[in-house]
Image (tube, rainbow, N blue to C red):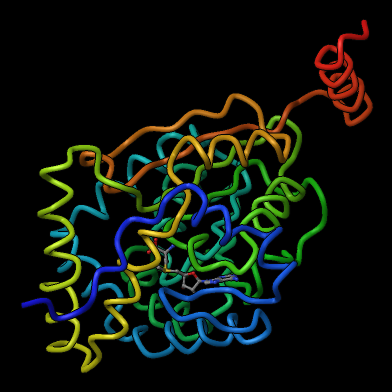
Length: 293
Ligand SMILES: C[S@@+](CC[C@H](N)C(=O)[O-])C[C@H]1O[C@@H](n2cnc3c(N)ncnc32)[C@H](O)[C@@H]1O
């Protein structure tokens, strides 16, 4: 018996239909299988995290068997942070990534936890205090689709398990590109499709039977934990995400699968060339494509 219906893994065309261009053309977006006008999607996401905030950390650890801590450590390590650097943790939630980043950048550095949901940031406060005598992480409430910081403010940007909820994914990454300094680095940690088909079958069973069931027991809502696996099945695959990042202008894009590809960490850089030089390179690329040299 299935507790929640598995919508199946979307195909390339269905995944493409969830990207900015189509969303803007139709004025419709999806949160899991539920389609809604774009204007209300942000509030739907906010409501969802308001509902789960209290149990978020506990459920994360329970449902991932603690693996999310390992993935997050690996993702932050990929940024190769140095003392004194400025880091933006987009969709930072309760702050796991911010705390890990602070460990690398030290007291001379700066970490900004940026999230649309106040309840999530508030819930993480005790955890951040417990680890550190005071909370040196700056919490800023705001939308990742229009980041409230000036161009070229940060040495590194990281988004962990958050971009999947955006109405405009490309706009979100473009904003992250904008606030990065030239030469700055970005890591996106997100769920993806397990590589091994047998493992995928087991994972599907777990996602739509066990997860919503555990969700219902601990939070009283099976819907909240059915929405999570639905959004995962609609998200661009690793190579598609690589292409999106490259089209925005990121360079040196690479990715690394974690736990058979349940999660994938993308790494990319903003070119350190001056904007004028970048524009020249871009023009050169276009000319090379069209045969003019
Ligand atoms: C699944 S949680 C991830 C939290 C944390 N990064 C982690 O890895 O544990 C997703 C977070 O993204 C936030 N979020 C969703 N849409 C957002 C948006 N448009 N702008 C900023 N934050 C957003 C939610 O409020 C939530 O805290």
